[in-house]
Image (tube, rainbow, N blue to C red):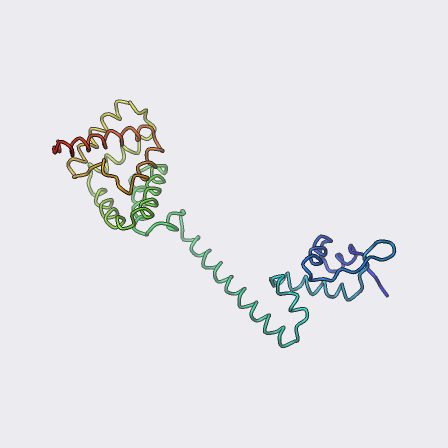
Length: 247
């Protein structure tokens, strides 16, 4: 009777010795007792079983189901294979859909944001806004969607309208440039004045942040200049509210 060492068994089935030992460990392939020399010897049936295990595993059958298939009757085997094939097809369809979605994305924006917000970001790119500022804008929308989803619709409409206003667009582009300015650069002082005047004209109040405090923190983290800008604007807005004056 032909007997095989574990190395010969593995070579016969086209797997590694480590794989054979793993199949022993999970109970798929019985582990023979050692002979007088201290070696494990395998017969032809073990080689057949190992080839069947490898074939099923290569076909995508989960190891947890292989043992039952090895001992199944023909009808049971066919039914089980049909179930496994259906599950594999489901996973393939899911992966195909993931690939389709990924192929339509120029970036990861559409994965987490509404199409209208993605359109706003694309419009900003068309205006010449830097990609860094666009990423910051994207982050603020992500946070708004999580913190105050009811504000999204109004925020989207306001942002769309803002880009139809030349002065608002100009200020937005200057804000983009100011990210790298020093906090006390004279240009920052002028930008504060312009933004403060814009807030008064549009009835905004930087001191009323509510649930969106985290958004302001994200902006401040991106730029020391903007940290100062936000602080000054909030202070002025609070003073106006306290005194009851808008100028």
